[in-house]
Image 1 (cartoon, rainbow, N blue to C red):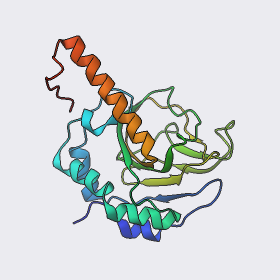
Image 2: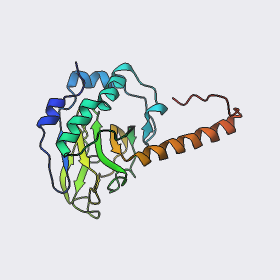
Image 3: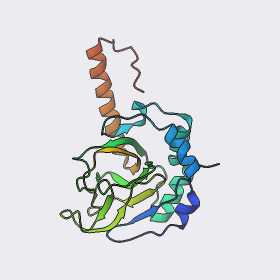
Length: 215
């Protein structure tokens, strides 16, 4: 049985204001969510991690495979009217949030569509609720507020006014982000990774022909 509820995604309404977005509260069913959370990577620092930096179990791996697969890509492309065929993806995982996170931004210009999926089983806090904003100046002037409850999906089209952010929160906030990006972004990631590995090898005294495990 699929972890992703693509029927719920296909039936979701696409909102046009203040920019194109949709929210699917039941994108991951509770039983599947429990399995994925059990196999979620152990993360103790408030930053975005690439998949190759983490260790995780089979249910989380299957979730990522479905998220990166053609059926999900086709469903998102159809909803937003965007051809995502052949566009590379960038996936990052987050486990914690700190008080200086959530500043208002639009996302990188190289992103086409951004997808956020949340995994916390409860969210009684005021902070950490993502707001889709009408401007870059006022966190209180929002069109939609997304509570980061487990199983909820948010997808939006990146543009020059896709402002979003949240009030401060410090603690666990599990989230996976997938973005379809322009190819040059993937090249930039690869260049940065090669540079990082080269520096680390040099620091550890590993020869250029040696292998360094990075996952």
